[in-house]
Image (cartoon, rainbow, N blue to C red; front, side, top):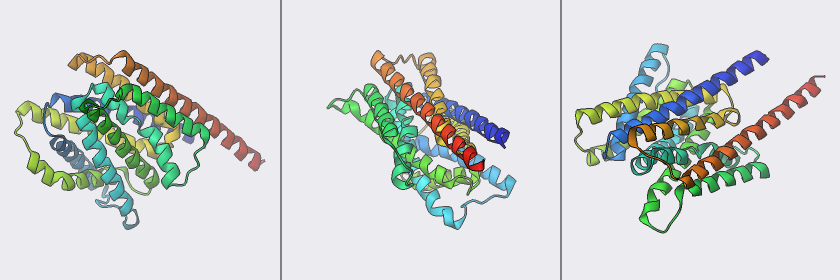
Length: 300
């Protein structure tokens, strides 16, 4: 039994690292696609993911719309996920790549708050303090001012909120739905919702822009399937720290392909958020050890 648990945890860690890198490369392709509307980029991203998920559903004879009792959760997950993507893509276009992705990675901390609010999971002073430290780190990245320059950063934070709410829904869904059904429902929902806006704001693209958007869609699919599977294999508190590997990937891609170098204040912000994430990881490991000790005592 212990080997199975460890194996699942390792699978979860591998999935979330692959997911983080997939989303990082996706962001790079989105930036390479140039000054296209965020809704246009979102449409192509989800079109590719929907096609891949549909293929898996047909292959495994799965469900397109999920079970009736889970449909409300699937709609909520899709709504928040769509908001998160549009906001994230806007931030990616306007900010240094690693800054935009770092703001999006506030989601693991926000999940703690949302699970306490909506799932009635207990949140203690230690967890509240770690969430607060993470937001302080975000402020170093945002460098707030009373000018329009702060808007992309605030939109980036909103993207992180949307992602956190979406992942909270994924946690609730757990093993109630197949991972490809969750991904297809979200992708198809997003396509339908943004189609009118996509048509209204559509701008003609070059062949290379289309190629970049298709590649972004493929990488996004890797990220989406990875994160959905990761939270099926292991609890978020055990594996969410590894989601930050994508920031390192984003920083490298930003330097190599865009000549972007985060300033010292942003780097301080990264270190603060990383430190809070690592502290949260260690704290949750201690909680897990205490739980296991209590279970052993009860067995005896």
